Image (cartoon, rainbow, N blue to C red; front, side, top):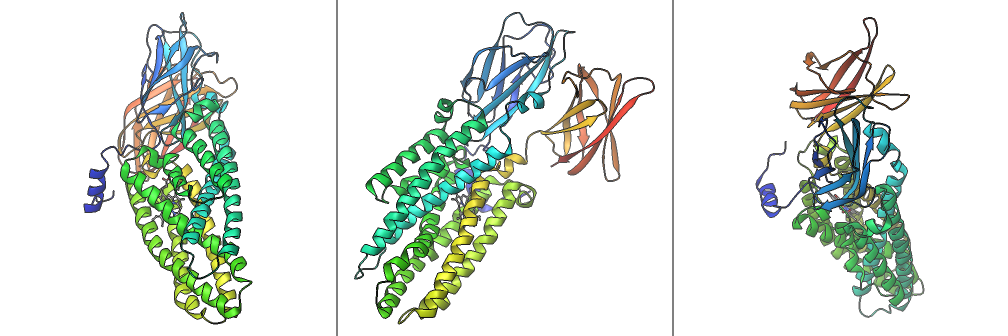
Length: 520
Ligand code: HEM
């Protein structure tokens, strides 16, 4: 675990509201696995942060897979409740949710409970959610839409920076014309990826368009489309700094404190000037200089690049500092840098950032000083170096699109873990809560693989948990049809545990399976 030094202390003080991004389910009414005598009037979920939930985002199914909720869910900050129909009979019920957390990420899950005794068993949460799940293609496409949107913002900011910092005494008409074309291209990409982002978020969350537009992600992305239309209509880059708010509003920073929000906005502004500026140099500078006499061209190139590289030196420091601040806020332990997808994406960014620094160093110390006079071969070398640098930067922007899509490390590193495996004719779903070294609550649900109904044939279900040389019994108790609980499961070590489960269905037949669970 990270030793919280003075800096992190300060961060903690500055961030009293730093909740974990990505809403997590903290409790349900009735409780998971409860066995009330009569059906409750409503079913409720309590999350770790406020969520948005539209019509159909909470559903309750009876044992035959029929929906039994009445009306739309009611959202009260972190709580979502839906009423149940009157006169529900005995049997198993499964409640599922698919809501949007404040950081724009859809989260889903569910639980089962049993009313009275008898009646059909509850359906599997995984199976019910599978029916409305959008799959990895939608998530990847949303990551790409974010990457394109961020690149468009960077390009517009780059145009603004270079137009403002164009050296006096040089005609800038040809350069400005090229910049306008780039700005229009950025606006087209911004509008297209903006529309795609909203539609993909809608598909991923499985809610109506109006519900998406009611979330911070929805309205901020819709506002970005309006800003892009103004940029295109007036052909001016001046509104583009407002777009630097978009990643913070529509991403993880939205659900964290002001330090994360501010760092994210400054990070994006610095990146816009630096990477966007680089793109403008690669794409517009040649047009602006090709008509000039060679020695005047050298003069102009060295003036423009000298000014840009002074800005880039400053921007690099700001990007690194704000990147580190955001990383510290989103991580709760150093090992999450390698253990989680989020952490690995940050490491890839850091590696590519170092490559970019290398390019910048060579340009500044070796190439730019030789540009004065006739650029010739040096000019060619510079163009190649800038193009390569830009290509690496575009990869970083793509990785960042993915970064925004991953759950922050500290969230994927906490909360219950679910796994499933096949055991004879049944499918077994396991939930281990909180999946940390120490005492855990373990739930096992068995479902018939053919019908999806609860699998009630076992006369006895036993389990052991092992890790290396350690083997411990798991005290399972039957909690309902096809549902077994071990409330005090001691898993003393971190690491990958193997759970061996046996289901005895008669004196002669026993099905066994093993599955691995990560304990953090
Ligand atoms: C060329 C270098 C870089 C580029 C182009 C870049 C780009 C971006 C962009 C566009 C965002 C806003 C996206 C969002 O919040 O959804 C962002 C956020 C972020 N960046 Fe960078 N960045 C760079 C370097 C770094 C470095 C060196 C670090 C780490 C030390 C870093 C860490 C982060 C983190 C943690 C976030 C917050 C992501 C989130 O949780 O949503 N970045 N970056």
